[in-house]
Length: 174
Length: 174
DNA sequence: GGGTTACAGTTGAAGTAGCAATTATCTACT
DNA sequence: AGTAGATAATTGCTACTTCAACTGTAACCC
Image (cartoon, rainbow over all chains, first blue to last red; front, side, top):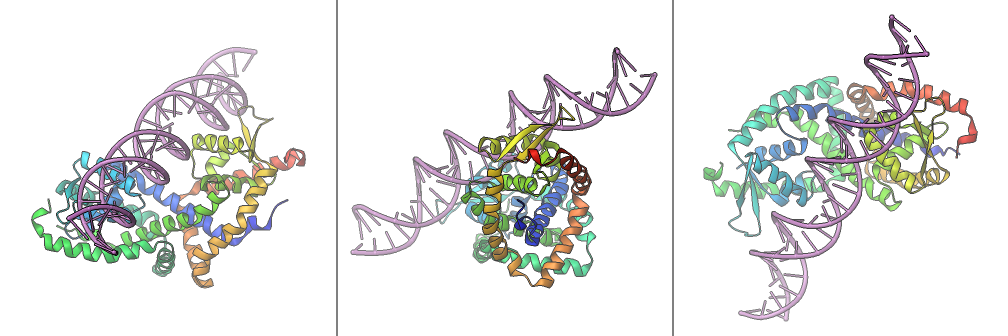
């Protein structure tokens, strides 16, 4: 009755991957909640905070995160409602909208980042030797590049976006 | 304005982890859908299929998967509606319910497993050298054991459950 | 230029998840 | 035996996400 496939080591490997991810994110989420954020909101704020100019098009956000454009619309709705981001309409393409992180948003994400990194250290990076961490990171990068090419394409777009942002100047930062 | 924390390498490591996981599961899901299953349903069927006797208490399923007991109730509802599992009331504890995989459920999970493993090979294990895969697995196991101790405790319970199942005999298998 | 096609973002509807409350049952203590 | 507290499973409610449909704008091609 039992198929040998049920015990395939590849199945164990994926299972381990999924369990580790699930458990880790479950450990990290409470800290975000403490600062009034969900993991999705942190992801969006982080992307914006790391982008020169602090803003990104809705579509770019969608490509860089785990969310559909529809999902992005709604996260940005929530973030805007709490004053952490603002929508800025795009001058050169009137279909477009920038999601712009506000000063308040930047303060919030920077505030949560310290404790968050402590959590990461405690549950993830601190559990591994430097060699193990390097090996893990390398393997993850290979997988990521294979399964999520958009992130790479998005990086190319990001360069263009950064250039646009630079052109737009610092006046619009908040 | 930009905090140095925004570029912390630990942040990159977690990000890579999350992106790789997200991308991988996104690549694997369409195959499940092809067989009329969601990833949650596959997870539940797989746990049942691997358990001697093909059945597990709702609570055990909850501990071993990514779902709350409430979530398990609903997944098993769906699986039961499509005839892939059945509920069997527990003789020795009348509060309890077994989720029992049916012949149909077993056929379905075994059928999807072959193509699924091909996908896993294509997007995950096949991209890494044997050494890289070992290193990855080892690191993941360390993380998993740290963040998801329930899985270990659940294993102890599973031994007990297996004993119960053996006692119940083969008559109830389908 | 005028029309077709593609794209950015939003919205409505539906599905899936968790939390908290509820019911039924078990365990332990006196 | 009887009561108090824990536990198993389910259900109501709410929040979040996606898919598909829609609006407005841009790009292309004749």
